[in-house]
Length: 404
Image 1 (cartoon, rainbow, N blue to C red):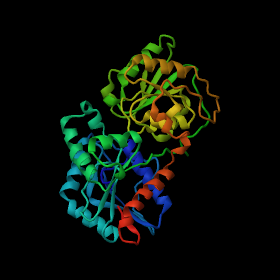
Image 2 (cartoon, rainbow, N blue to C red):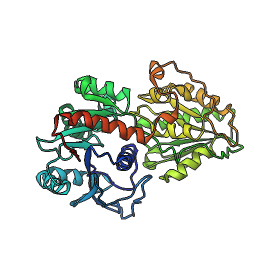
Image 3 (tube, rainbow, N blue to C red):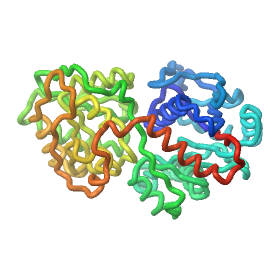
């Protein structure tokens, strides 16, 4: 169920959904008939500016195959602004029966399992359909101060209550699994940790063009939990020894970061290929976030052979293990020390392996982490998700299960 997906607004959950769909399509598992449901796309923001509809994996399709089909609900529209998202949610809520009638006609009959990749259960499925919810994080419960009262109420209605009642929950990390158990009081038996993947065809070692003067890159939106203010102060400290040090930022919400220090360059929203090229063209990637349910960017950077300085927040120690320099996200001094260490690392100009890195952390999660970035593939994610669905559908009718 991808009714709220707005093409061109590729945050972590959108990347997850699009890549999972692409790899489920490639598997074409004959145990399941899969129908992917999207809304019509609004191609302009409320400002009147066009919105990019490019995707790092697949574009909008309306195709059919033996076990896999894409359909678009013609009377619902997804957009990128908060107002457009609210209208899409209200539309799915008020037209629930009409939406499900449309889905069942497109699927050729009743749907056994409804899969929600964005955590929010929109719209609620019929009582005969088993909901499976992907929980990326419960940040609004772990860091409530980062959300407005309205946002917390929305997440309670769309995330917490449906998640607690779901037939199965897929989480993106052990950290998120623990958060679900703590906050939603869900039994461990209903929770399945399935790591997301990264695009290993795009994010891979290649010719590095590390500049003579050190350059750092932080790919993150200008949200409070991304910890930009402490990063700016840490870079200022490092610039005492490296006065030509520059910090590049990308992502949306740039206005929330103003005024930017004079050593910062903000490039806005850029394509995945441009991000890959930046990874290969900087001295190190920094990721001092205060909270992460998984953490795509530091893994992508490591896959290109770029040193990474990351925080110990959330799932980052679990996912990055000893491949990154881990720092205390609350300490400007620790972040600065991690950057100093990264600047001393030498990467061959045509490096093809993971750079040597030291960790200032001995987080116990690191011992459970996969030993290589290569373990995070979208094909493995799709296979593991299908295993969850197969287990759930074992109590359904013996023929191929309908999944939406």
